[in-house]
Image 1 (cartoon, one colour):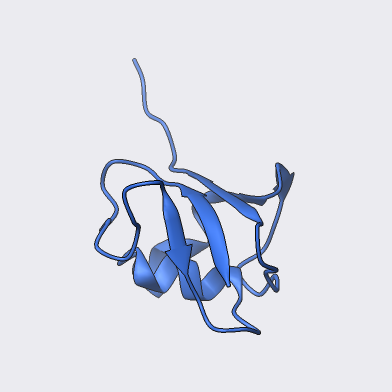
Image 2: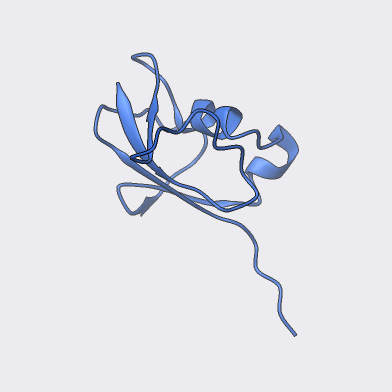
Length: 77
């Protein structure tokens, strides 16, 4: 299956093709996407993650054609 991934600049884009899609096996979860992006498990809960524009937890199962979005914590001052 293929999912569209919108990831932050600090992620590893090795598993994302030129069109922004990541190929995953059937039964994959959001956690699999986060792993492919090189995000350590410790930091995964600190991210805002969404599947099809709805907030999602790392254990959320994915379907072909889903859209995964990631936002990291912002700092300002």
